[in-house]
Structures are given as structure tokens and as C-alpha cells.
Length: 272
Image 1: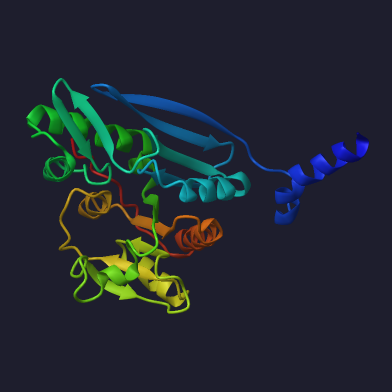
Image 2 (image 1 turned 90 degrees about the horizontal axis):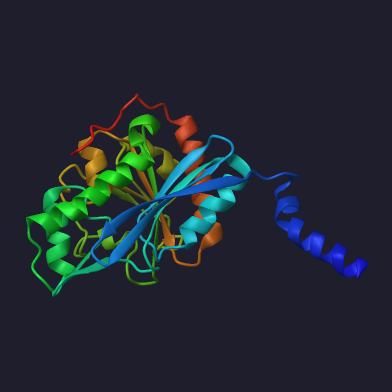
């Protein structure tokens, strides 16, 4: 029994010992509920007991980033704000005989919310439905609070072959939405960092990390466009689902970047 207890203790401490530290930070979580007809979306914020990098996760089926963020925050502090609504990419709800669905990363202006509802819903969305969806975006921004942070750092995951840095190349479906693209051929094309600040792009390129600089001409309902229009430095750390260690490596690189690159105090002007 004693040998089993010792073995269990060593296994539970292995991640900590490997990190070179003998203590890890703990966190407390609080959830705010946003209710749609027959659907509840939980905006959960996990706050570690030390300040650090603050992450935002919008798609509930992209869990590799959440795991990597917790790995980072256990040692460095910070917070993770995530939407939880059933481990799916899109949020779906029903209203009497109507069925609606939308991408939660496309709802940060009225036109974007209407467009994503039209794309994914079985029913036609009226003004009331668009505003229900827009209220979720406003609530997410209130809880994540880029006004006080002065930045937005999101985490996304993709599937192999569905989206990559090559999606921004000539002839591909995202061509023209990026001002600059840097490709490190030794990195997996699915793993990249997407930014809105030229200084961020220059830093990542110097570090030989796959990087995309968003074009100011990109106009849709996405959070990155909202951030650019409101002069909030924005970073999306995107990796293939399952690449948890690579996601953590890129988080650490972004953490270093935010320390090394001097930022002006740019804050959000909330769109109501």
C-alpha cells in the first residue's frame, strides 16, 4: 500500500517536477449565463491567483487551446474566459417553429451577426434575433474586459487540412484579408499566430513563427476586425487540434512578445 501511495504521489507531481517548480497556482471559476430560447451559453472565467496573460476562447469544441492555457496559467498566472454551450463550434437555439445557428466569432457587429445567422440557420432571423445574438457579444466583451487589459488574446484550434496559413495564399479563400504572411516551412502549416499589429508581426517573423498580419480592408463580424477598428492590439494563437505542446510553445512566445514589444495604451471603444 505504501509503495502504491508513493507511486501515486510521484505521478501526481510529475508535471510540476518537470517544470522545475515545486508549486503551481490555483484558480477560481465563475460563470455568467446568457439565455437564448431553449439554449443556455455559459461564459466561464477562470481566474488564477496571480496576474498574467488573459485568454479568450469562443468556440466550445476547440479544447486544445484551453488545456494549453491552463498549463500556462498554472505556472504564470492569468485568466481564461471561455464560452461553454455543448462542445460544438456553432451555437444553436430554437424559438417556437424557428431554428437558428451562428458562429460566435462572427457576431461583433450587427452586419456580421445577421450574416452568420443567415449562413447557418434553417429559419430567417429578424431584428430581434440579431439583437439577441449581439447581446452575447457585448456580454463577452464586458466579462473579458479588453478596456482594462489593453489587448485581446484568443485561442483557436483547427482540423488538419481545413484551415492553415496556406489559406491566405493567392487563389485561396482568405487571400486578400492579410497584409503580410510569413511562413516557416519547418512548422506545421496549421499552427500560426494571427495579429493586427505590424510590430507583433515583425516580432513573430524574427522568431520564425508562422504569422499573419490582418489587412485593414478585412471587414466582417469577427472579433479580430472589431479589435482592429477599435484600436485594440489583437492576437489569435491558432494550432491544429491535439497540438497541445505547440499551442503552449506559441503562448509562451506571445507572452514574451507582449513584454518585449512596447505598446501604446490603446483601449476598446465598446460597440453597443
